[in-house]
Length: 153
Image (cartoon, rainbow, N blue to C red; front, side):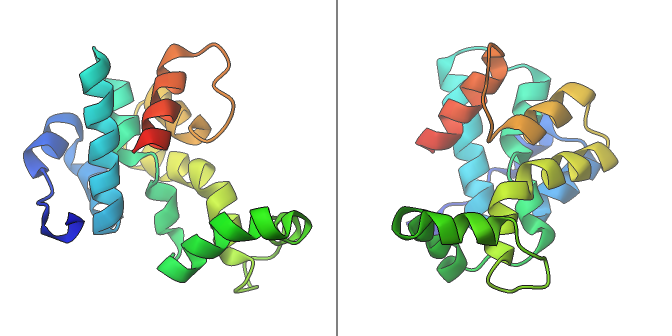
């Protein structure tokens, strides 16, 4: 029952400055809980650097650019499986197209999140991790850990 779970504000305050806490506060409750699960998964694996903790808590903050209701999140998951060409076209669509918006949000939220985090004072490393969290991890150990924790959470 996620709706009954409290948001661990003390955990958030341990890792985020007041400005970055404001970014975290823009996330939906479900996204805040997801971000805390990502952080806890990383902590369960071992040491978490301050930059990795910031990235774990703010990796989805770019999704706050527009409302992202449940039906759009479902569409973003299902349409690429059912009609990949259409999903690809929508992901390259216009911000003014309401059908394209959820696909743009899904594709662009890492870059948008990095911009928001940078503007709120996140370090270059944390900003980079946020901006890259949905891409190929390459040989960056922290990014690989963040991606894996995100996918599991």
